[in-house]
Image (tube, rainbow, N blue to C red; front, top):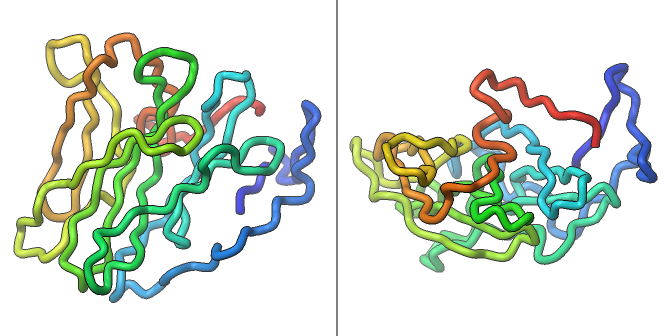
Length: 214
């Protein structure tokens, strides 16, 4: 569950919100696995961005429950959050994990999109995906990452993607480091006027992960 702490490490309250008591975990929030031989694990950081354009920032994070969560400052998840990572339906592919998300208002309509990658259990031989959700956790786009290479049987994206303009056109690209197919890049059509709110892991190329007051 997320915590909001002040600089002195005491729990935060303010602006009409009280995080001195954290929200209780929901049903099914226990880890699906913590066994490295079953599925790769990572140590993700939280993401802080204003998803709905109301001037207050939300807290997003992937969890070992196989979901990506987004908490508003009222200590609830709005819309369709949390988002359960889809599986292929193949035998043994009963849950997947997700990378840290990045956040950008791709079409500059005042509502942000949330972008991340996923990966499967090792024994399934599956392929993770690239996911794009709207600000309420509704799926907009989902495609498979490339098939594995490098003598691997599965592939996925463990680290946060990075949003950047890496070519000469005005649209942004999404750069993804995969487990078994190297670095891949995807074009983000219609993103020339996008607002990048949290564009890479830990929020900046210096990995500072800082944000202003909620």
